[in-house]
Length: 530
Image: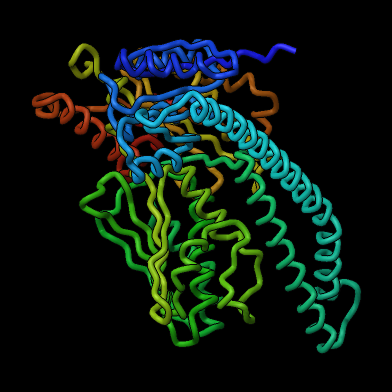
């Protein structure tokens, strides 16, 4: 039976070394087909066209040198086995190469046909084994996630039933109950709520690992979320006699984030801090700007608790991890809160970390991106190096007819925002991210590069498209208003980025100024309402 041919891509710029490698390959016992290129860019192009059995890689090429060479190759083709050929016997470089996924490292002066053939065969087999292990791990993780998701969903129904009946008994609907029995039922209810929280965390963690967790960024004021989190956790802190304080930087800008998800992170971190802080201790939630990173807001939760050891700090954000030193009455969860928080922060392109020393408390810090209206506006409000001549701010407000709203109000407002986004000219207009964090009324804003008269065409288009949504009129009222954005002459002078920033400042003031809101609501602008 004929042995299959091994296709080798040789990336080597020295003709003598390339001929030597070809000779050693021909001297081997296995049939080999060699494609030789002398630049890394040519090698990457060849890999894009055809996947070889193996790559033999020289590290010093005309367009790449040293460790950067194998880094670029492994990033481009991580599943192709690579054997490095080097003129230097460098153990440090060899270890770096192996850590980046390279299968072997050979010194050119010591290459024989036998050891080269053996290195190639082992590299191909190891890569195949790694690939099969990766597939098996992926299948195992998928099975585990499906199992956890199924079990969690199945547990919800009986737990909901228990919760409802215990609540009925405690409310006295089924008749009066003695005080001692009421106390027992309260313990049952507390345990049911704890199980509900665990199941919720399991489902969230499963969604995070499978890439199904989603965030819906909005333009939000972070101080409102911090105050909301503190209000929700104040009873817990008071019960444990732990101080709960807020420290907010007066320079805090708006952030571009999902308010529900950010609140989830804040509650996770602050609840943990309260849980592991002894009575008469303190927890501080802070949000501030850092001059070295103006594009992010830094939020931290500090406590005066027991602190975290070095080993625990390295693992504390991993799924299901719990610090073995914290095994006491405080341990009531599954160790998923910090894992979920990490994934939420990651989906916001932020970072999260912990600073702690045993016995000296802990500080968990995460970042969120600053909402930059000027950055969003720049591509649509400029043309051929100049600011467009006129702008209008459209305000689309949807208000539910009932409280609570009918149906899934979150889906309704998301559908309306998508329709508004489709009704604009993408090269001249911008549908801003949804604003605000609370209340059922949803307000969308569009900055349009036009005047008030022509904005009427867009208003009509938005109205017609929204009217086509089935049952929307039975769920909410829709109000659309337009107001011109009036820039001072001075704002149209100077460098273009400064002009865009002036426009962004003007739009922001119109959106968040009470005077402008009153002007819109009293009918001083063009108005179209249901």
